[in-house]
Structures are given as C-alpha cells and as structure tokens.
Amino acid sequence: MNKLGKRQHAILFEAGRRLRDFHNGENPLEAWTGLGMPSEYKTVVKAGLMRPISREVPRCTQWYILTEKGFSIVKDLGYLSGLPCPPGTLKHVLSLS
Image (cartoon, rainbow, N blue to C red; front, side, top):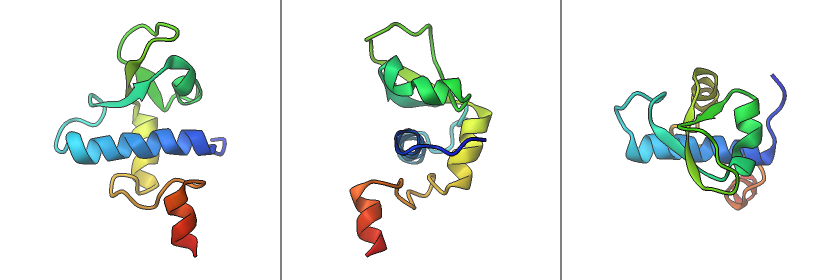
C-alpha cells in the first residue's frame, strides 16, 4: 500500500474518533464515520479505505463508511484509542517536544 498523506491520516483519525466516541459496540463497517465533500474524501475512496453511503453528489456534504481495509488501518495505527495524533497536527508536533 502507498504511504498515506497528512490529509488521509486526518480523515482516518477522525473516523477512529467517531467510532470510539459515537459508535461503541456497533459494526464498524456500518457506522457513518466520515462527513465531508466528495473532493475531501476522493483519495481515501480511491484507495479503497472508505466508501460513500450513497451516490456522491459534487459539492454536497455527505457521510462515508470505512471499508474492511480502512478499518484495518485505523485499528493498526491505534486511532481507535485516540493515540497517536495524525502526523502534521499541532498535537502531534507538541507530543514530540
């Protein structure tokens, strides 16, 4: 798999946070864990990490769901526990000092 960029890490971190805070005990592959424009989620959808819950409409906010591959990465990166923060974020930079 290709390396994930900062934006992809941020999207997957947010998906992990939503799973942890709002969907505890639910099937993680059915939980609505991403909210944004199709242009924001384009790279994670193309990589097969998330999928829209319905047909994508340009310039309209909609919900996204993790795929098995995406959930596996979220779990492996420890994003379900809230740590570590995605690279490039202020919290991540502060934790390094």
